[in-house]
Image 1 (cartoon, rainbow, N blue to C red):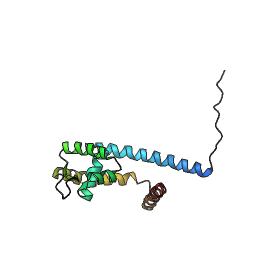
Image 2: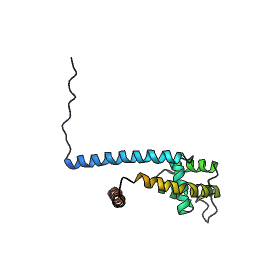
Image 3: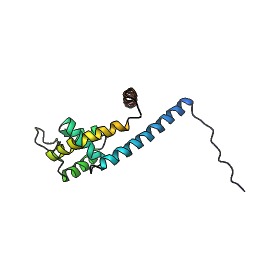
Image 4: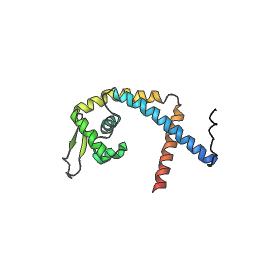
Length: 159
C-alpha cells in the first residue's frame, strides 16, 4: 500500500512575513557561498579567515588593541587571543604593552606580516571583485547601502 502524500501545513504567516523569510534564506545562502569561496582562497595563503582578517585590519588601520580587533572582526576576545597566538607562532604579529596604559595590549604587524599582506592583498581584492561580477557597479553600491541600513535598523531596534 503506497504511503499517503505528506500533508502540507496550512500557512499561518503573512505575505510580508513570507517575503522576509525568503530574503533571509537568500541572504544566508549567498553568504554561505561567498564565505566558502573566500575561505578557500585565504587557505591558499596558509591562513584562516580570522587570521587574514587580523592581518588585513592591522595593515590598513595600524596597531589596534585586542578589544578593537575583536570588535572590528565580530569575534570574541578569546578568539582574538587564539588567533594572535597562532599568528605570533608564525612571526606575523606581536603584542605590545609599551603604551602609557600597560593594561592595553596592542597588536602590531611584524615586518614579515607586512610583507605577506602587501604580497597577497592585491590578489585578494581582485578575487573579491571577481566574486561580485554578477552585479553591476550600481547594484554593488545599492546592495551595500541596503545591507548597512538593514543592519543598523536591527541594531537600533535592539537598543
